[in-house]
Image (cartoon, rainbow, N blue to C red; front, side):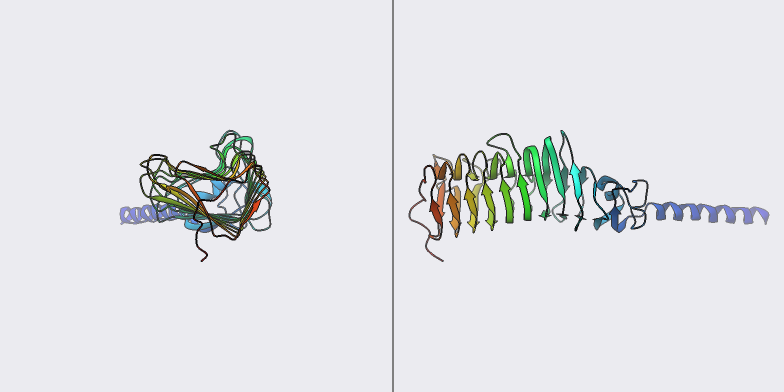
Length: 324
């Protein structure tokens, strides 16, 4: 009888230990970080964590990390659906010699980055480095001073999408192939920029299908400025045997870029129109060259643009697109 009672007590203790361990390591759907937090905490509202990396391991897939007060919350690698959000507080990601945020998720995952100040100090590699697939939203953020790209969007699986809105991307890149936003997938994808300021980078926005399998990749820019970049403002690039690059430009300011405002660089031997930029209701002014076409590239106008005052204006592909 004593032996049975002892066994029961031992079993109860073991179960209690398992329950306590599970509770202690359960992931919450909403977690919190604070400039005075501690990653040893459970990341609750009253016991917040110190860094995004500390909080993400305690946040369930599809959950949200919120910022309680101003602070620097460090680099983070994201491998699941998650929202990191700061409304009204400085939420810094300050890095040197590395990427700020790495996103490597599956096709069904959605990542939202909102209200972040991602700073590379002139030595950081990429502000946001996206590989894999899935969907990334960047909202109300500032990305600056990275040696490669503000956003390096290079999905390696089909169906990836990038949405950037209400964001400033500046002072990134050190060459003509790097800059503000670089979209260079290995398998398809789409990017959408709305109300984005891409300023004083090496290059502004590059949509490059030369590394992707045959098919097409698409970029869309609306209510956006590409100003003061030291190479091209907008580049669409395609090479033989790879994806066509299509870019739609609507209500966009392309100004004071040191090379071309807009460049469509297509293959020369075949694939007529493999790199196409379509422009409407936009201003192209004070660039070294307004519009530049290489090979079979095409830049088409809806006839609703302001286009003058460039060192060399260049010309649109004729015939122009019919008014819609």
